Image (tube, rainbow, N blue to C red; front, top):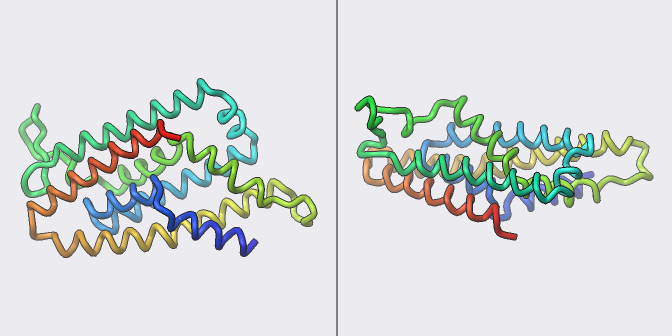
Length: 208
């Protein structure tokens, strides 16, 4: 099973939607925000592993309509996050146009960031396809461990690998954010960068 863990690390390092998501959030809001997102993503992986064991993932992947609905929901959520990022004004604080007071766009709470990670993972149908193509082939019937338990173990290994790789990304991007903390212009640019990443991720959901 060590081979699977090494493969999971390689997959985590390869550029993809989740690590770009962590990069964007960490660059815009700091390393702590990145770790909140990572915890959400890992929670999503736990759910995805459970669905994989239960056979639900295979049913969704085999249904074009269900797959398309998930694509639309995922894209809509990412575009919403992009819109919120583009709302950021001077000083990394957004103004609520209706109430004319600062909003929390520039400083999302840990809970919101955690939920972003969960929704990002669960609303991406390509994660289902990835889990189906990555974990089941590693399961071996000649092992003394039940296939379902093997799947759960591989899911746990994937979570650990995700924490290691994505955590490194969050720390690096957070260091950049901290370095630019006193530059309102740089903070605005980081939020615009974050918004652009969300738009690209939304488009990528519909690309093969």
